[in-house]
Image 1 (cartoon, rainbow, N blue to C red):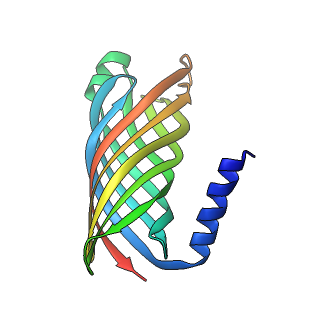
Image 2: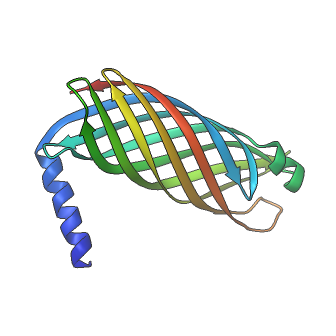
Length: 179
């Protein structure tokens, strides 16, 4: 392990051990979705938590389930996009604006899986994902903007292997509970 990575990991772990609070949230998002250079829509549900350290840095975990609609992908490749799910780890910094408001700026890494199908021929591609986002926190309300990108690999049952990029930009609205 490189020294920089080891130091960053130690700082995050020590910060999480002295957490200043925790946010639990459930959110919905709507966004633009691109797969294999074809553009569609994405509608998702997010469930997650952020552990906020005394120094306002945070690390969290999130599960996302999304329904996908991509007519351009279907016209070009003959397959329909169905759904995707992912697990993400956001890491970032919280900036307090007042007693009830703050802004979270973060990067995230995770793993994503996406299903495409044509009749009985279906495929689940999966791969590493990364991105960044900004969330505004207002008492119980969370409002955010997020960009993610991933490398999805897989092959339909009777087709050739796929190795494509997935890109998303989403508007997120959610409800959060602070501990």
